[in-house]
Amino acid sequence: MIDIAKLRDARLALQAGRFDLAEEILAKFRETDLRHARSPLEKRQISDELGQIRSLSAAMRDGLALARERIRQILGASRRLETYDRAGARQVGATAPSEVGRF
Image 1 (cartoon, one colour):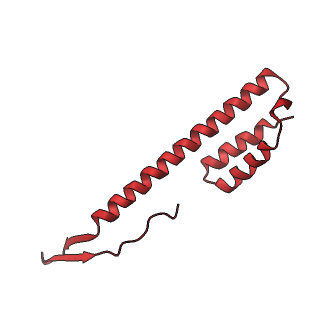
Image 2 (tube, rainbow, N blue to C red):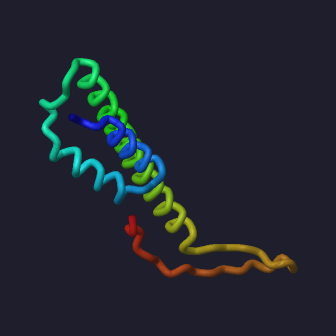
Image 3 (cartoon, rainbow, N blue to C red):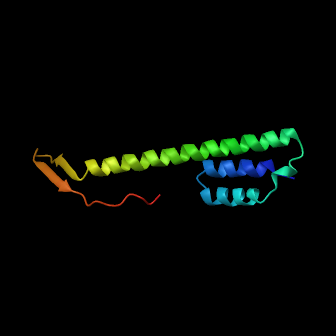
């Protein structure tokens, strides 16, 4: 029998940022034969949970891509930082470029 609660646990782990736990749960789920779903209701619940997980994963992927692009823009804009001290004198500083890609 398929444990639908495990799929919910995977979705909640994704929402909490526990990607390692979500991957572990989903890996175990992949080993389960979906033909063991006993009723149309159970099949629909599985489909609904997988759909939510898929949507959540896509939204997270898109959000991370946007965040990375925004960081690149900020780093590009801050390469030559111009500020003013209390006396009104312009202070120009350069920042060292760094690679964005830890995520």
